[in-house]
Amino acid sequence: SRSTADLASPRFPERKAVWDAVSGYVQQQLQLHQGIRIPTLGSFDVVHTETLVDNKTVILPRPVFRLARNLRGTQKLENKDYLAVSRQLEPLKYARVAMEACVSRRKAECCILGTTSLLHHCLEKGVSVALVLRDVGVLLIEGSV
Image (cartoon, rainbow, N blue to C red):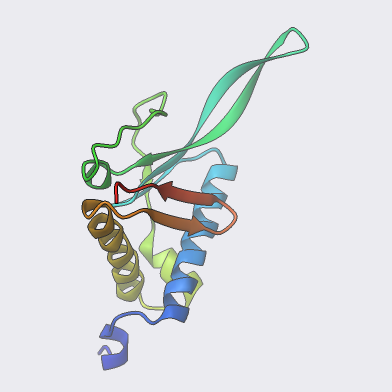
């Protein structure tokens, strides 16, 4: 049976642990040149771009992020970087994140969905938002307010 504390809203240390685990998972997937989809937040993937170096064409991997449709629609945002190939990306494994963060799967999922819900609410109101993913990067969306 689940304890009352387990069903409660995640506290700050738990939220930090969950998002640190998400960041580590995303970073690992990108290093393996594999994409990952975080439902209601967006997708991380690696695309290969050609660049000229010393008159030679070199193909370089470049990480890209594609904001989820539910968040894009709040301010009519468009992705400048479309994934080169439309492919199915592995969804975030909540159980793995939960294990890394030492919380229940349900609490990990509630934490992630709670954060993306807050982002959605802020974007609807025109407020600027920033989401820091440790060792991955910062998602910054400037609001209209």
